Image 1 (cartoon, helix red, strand yellow):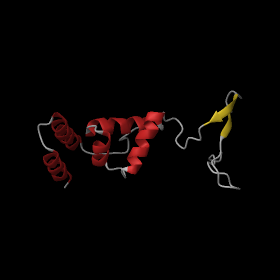
Image 2: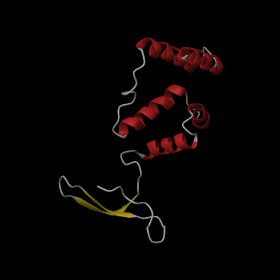
Image 3: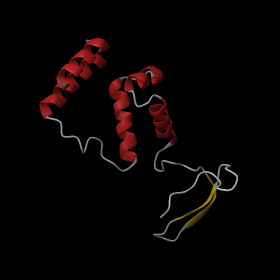
Length: 128
């Protein structure tokens, strides 16, 4: 199956999706549908992905722009990953002790018991 096009190959204008079809049950829907490049994501998740891309994947920039904590942004990212049909962290093979220490540092940061600078120092210390 070929991916859908979003631009007209003749004039370059935005294309409109007017028909959707299910091969499994042979149902067709006709109307005017948004040309979604990431099907399966709701509007809030698409906004999150747009912000993530605009911030070049830098969670510190997302924290400032969205005024959310690191754990909240991480959770929303995991929701997007799951909505796309993947399991977050599935391919990661970090030692459990490292994960626990990292989680504790992030929880302390979220609780306000350590500063961002201190958390960054501790996290980088653990990576080396």
